[in-house]
Length: 166
Image (cartoon, rainbow, N blue to C red; front, side, top):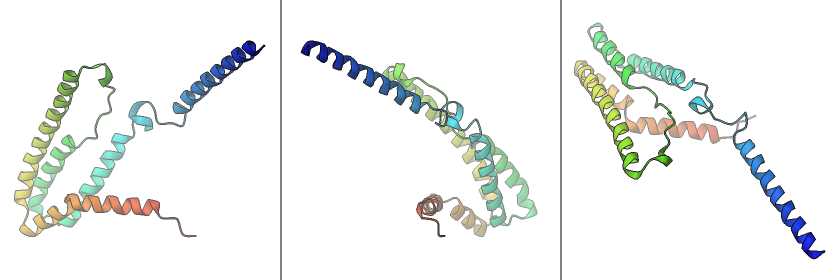
């Protein structure tokens, strides 16, 4: 009888563990979870990114107080920047099936693509920056400073973590 109870308990435990595994898998890929193209964003990421960049460029344009003669250079700069400032594409690459040299080659490929974009952006930036007055250059430097971006990110984080006053 003890042997029968032990076998029954083992089977019951296996069934429970198997059921728990299915439940965990179903939860991980549930309808409310972020899966699929754009990690649950239904392809809206690129639209939001473009809207964000247009807003930032409009704010910078207003702060620079560009003259009529500088508007052409601004347009050229923003057009060139729009081509290079695209959100990262989230393509499914199976790095697990690659060998170590293949993974490194893929990483170098991504790095070269990014470098080409940065070189194009740098060329357009230098051309535009040369048209700015020293005062405008100071404004541009301050508005595009990494320190400013970090401060804004910190402020957003602090606002989210504060409880709402009622």
